Image (cartoon, rainbow, N blue to C red; front, top):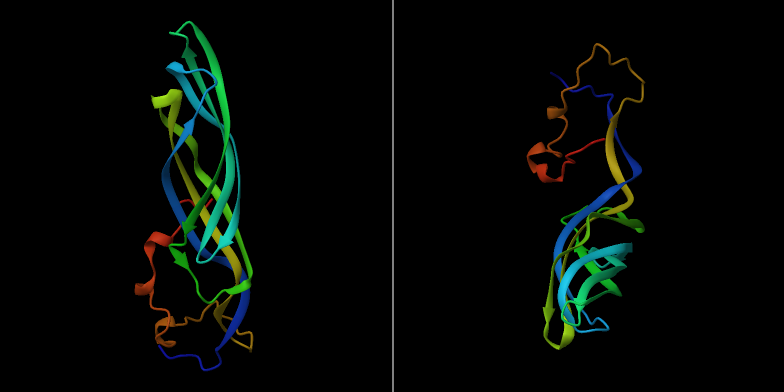
Length: 187
């Protein structure tokens, strides 16, 4: 096939996802109930609130959540619930970043793909309760960037015409694409 010499290249400025990252983490918190616990009856996390902030080459997720611990004390004769609000800051690196984005237009967002969840609660020395929490965040950086498109200034009819894009330069080989960056769910 021959290349149609009427075709030209244009740069279009678009707002697109220019960076992505994901981070799963385990953290520990120590809570001191008002009474020395005899046993832990339950532990849960509620009211997770967070926001995303651009931080160097990544995104920082800053937030708070409430830890609630239901415990018995006085040799298992009484119960109470200890509540504590915890602040956190999680830096999520970008595993993909388009360096050609216009940084002054960058906006970041975060989604908790796994809400903070208590996976273990145990009594430690001094009447404290040690809480192990796991959480996961997915972040995106959206900004203006340029895309290159092929145009025909004559506005030709291409219903019966075939353009062989393999012959138009050697830029854009599909071998350089990272299949891990493709979305699993497009809906």
